[in-house]
Image 1 (cartoon, rainbow, N blue to C red):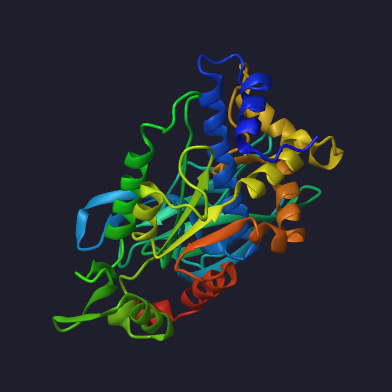
Image 2 (cartoon, rainbow, N blue to C red):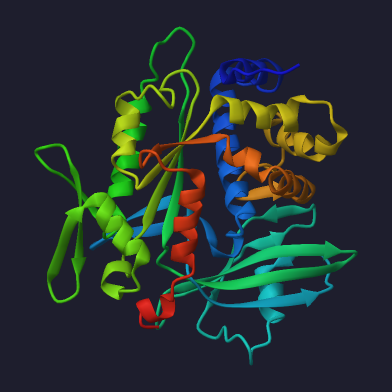
Length: 383
């Protein structure tokens, strides 16, 4: 049976999965928020951005480093990278990974080890696993990703990511109580997202009295550049100029609607606040989220059984630890989701509508991301 309404899906989850909680619908709504985050994560992974990706990194406001904000996903320049192979018993800890690196190829003397495990003894994978950080010379961190397992052999890719990202992705979703026309927190969450989107990047948005949107960016030698926003954004994308790029962050908001915010064609106040704050605002449609949940949770296909099991075990009343989040996920579920997204990438991209910039596409967003990824960040940051 297919359920096209996310409100219907939320009720099904509330009645069948979260019926033991004090507020089943609220718990079901939070799980839908996790789904949005997981869809976004595997979209970025399918785009080939896994090695640049960090999860829940703390980023400083532009020009005001005393204030920091955790963002769901940030994409960072890769300064260097290496692969390691080893056959050790689980868990795969940061200590084991760091000890397996050839120090003549990849120096780690200035890094401070983390306590994270990339893969636990019960096969819980940590996505974009932070294994070490450094504050010396220039700030960077080491992130490990599991490439594959063959029998008892593991291939791990270690990336040194520069601390300043070139793009961020944030997911926003708000649910409502039945019988209430509007979720009381929806405008507050929109304001929070808008504030972070506006404060992280050197590219500032300025609204003219006519309503036209301009972009303002501070360049070296006390020069301020101000131009129509779209024109300045295009100039930044084409540029290799450090004064335009060194503190620029492309901000992307991912929004989803389940009864109280908007539709992609009917923008209410919350959506307008977000659309004028992020550089890109993309809308995960009810159809897309519904299709994903139906495939992995409600359909009877045995191929998705490990995903369904990981989800149910994460929310079971007797759960010991979560196995289905953007940070930690069951290894078998991860493998199935990777295959699902890579095999259905065009369809997944069609789950999204671009709200802003107007008349743009997901392919154009992807193109901008890769333009930034492929810039010479060592030269831009004088590393």
